[in-house]
Image 1 (tube, rainbow, N blue to C red):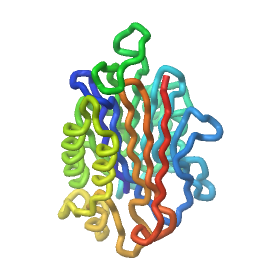
Image 2 (image 1 turned 90 degrees about the horizontal axis):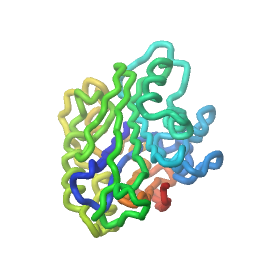
Image 3 (image 1 turned 135 degrees about the vertical axis):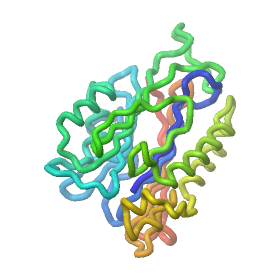
Image 4 (image 1 turned 120 degrees about the horizontal axis):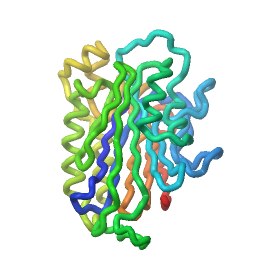
Length: 296
């Protein structure tokens, strides 16, 4: 299980940030992974990497500006309870191939589904143009007084095959089910995320307070249960998976990486990640990674 909340501004409401993202990665604590960093093979791309033997190099969430002039972000979520026939490829390269390639999100998604031999997935792609809104080549103000152009958010799934264009200018939530039947924790989390963004994403926003509230959302242990759709997909485990911050009772699986990404109106990005080191989320060490990048 994973969960993703996104806001991409459409240029109609002043705000310091044109992109706000908050995400939890749920995985077995013992599964090896690298924390977020610029990639060795392409330093334009930033994200964590899966290091499971035989699946090294895959990623669940990454961002970059390849090619120049376009910011691209990809996030991968499994679709719980769906089995697929003729699966011959792992899902880990889906995000990486999007970020390192030249295709737009639409073209890449069409290619993915045309050659579908993956397990069930939801793939969220975001593209932002870096051209300045004022058109005169001067750098926009990061306080949100000037607006850079909006972006494109796509939700692509192979369970069933679909490519949906998501509306910008509002809070979006994605999880491990279809868009038509979102899990309750996605619905309730999206409402909380929307409230935080509306209150915090203002000109001259307090960045640290904004990040703290987003991280607080990702740490929320409240169970949104009963949930008929989650029960249908996850059976006896449903209740334990019904919170934004997942902790399974056996202690081997749960939310192990929390990520917040902010991109301001001048295309300055801040990538903040909290990652569990060890296999116990309560007694283990959580390390924080902060990466800043000027996209152009």
